Image 1: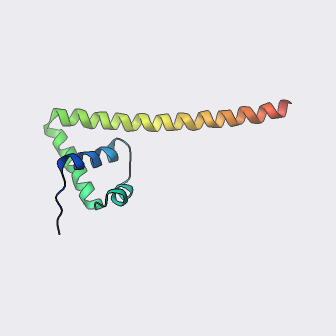
Image 2 (image 1 turned 90 degrees about the horizontal axis):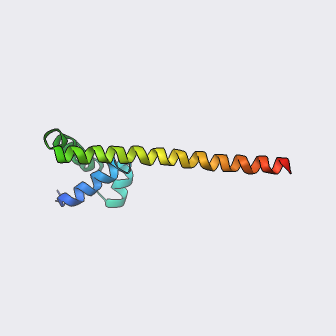
Image 3 (image 1 turned 120 degrees about the horizontal axis):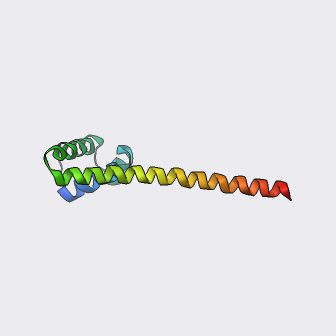
Length: 94
C-alpha cells in the first residue's frame, strides 16, 4: 500500500539526512518511513539540483552545514580533552 507524503515532509527528511547527518535507519525509526523511500527522495533532490539553481544552493548549504557541524563536534571533543588534561596536570603539580 503506497502512502503519499507531503513535499514539505519529504524535504524535511532529506534536510535531516543531508544537513544534520542523520542516518536512514534513525529517520526510518523516528518517522516510520522506509529507507528505500528516503533514499529515493534524496536521489530525487540531488537530481533536481542538476537542473535547478535554487535546489543546488540549498544542497550546497546543507553540505556546508553538515561539514561545520562535524568540525564543531571535533573541536568540542578536543576542548574537553584539553580540560581533562589540564585538570590532571594541575593535580600533579599540587
